[in-house]
Image (cartoon, rainbow, N blue to C red; front, side, top):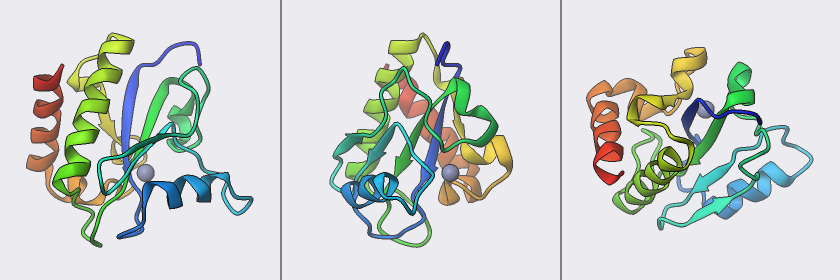
Length: 138
Ligand SMILES: [Zn+2]
């Protein structure tokens, strides 16, 4: 990647699955999808793709975005507090690293209209709060 313009947040859409299970799935031959990071239910962060390489998660925006897949306990897609805390820290660090701010943090939905990350598409107020929390953590 030449330049990172945005950070894209996704949800794994597989309630209760672990970060490692999702990483192993990206690695498997069944999957043509990959993300830079997966954030797990215990707040663990697994990096799957180096930051200078493209991931394959965000459609037309793969060439200029960092992608983060986030695990969630239930089908509604809401992140638990450990996962949320780790996501905020990771995202704030990436913003610092690439000279971005919280307005450069976007949802998969903002690129394609896909219902991802589900809870934060259905609850725009929760999405606005997430961006504010990233700003506070920077
Ligand atoms: Zn997505």
